[in-house]
Length: 147
Image (tube, rainbow, N blue to C red):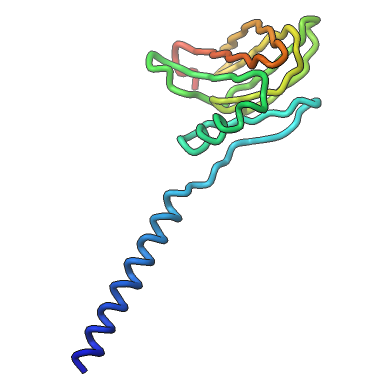
């Protein structure tokens, strides 16, 4: 009788330990909700809300020629959603995404572009030149939270 209680207690402790380590693994592997797609023939990846999403975007970065970061305030906090538009040098829109995340990567062919981003009805714009094999990084910043 005493032996069966010890075995039962040991089995119960082993089961609880296995369950708690499994639950920890489930909670630590948070789902990544980055948005991936293709707009007008240009692949993109957008998100970056949280460490898992940020890491996933960084890992996929080699597949994109333009890396955009949107931030706000004195501490450069990531911000979004942002209304993003990219125009070619003739002023024709070649990519537009409402709701772009703080980290957005776009695959564009070599050329000159104007990037416009609206956050809270305040527009930031910059020109960027994409060269073959040389990804560009562009950081757009708003001084105050516009929401």
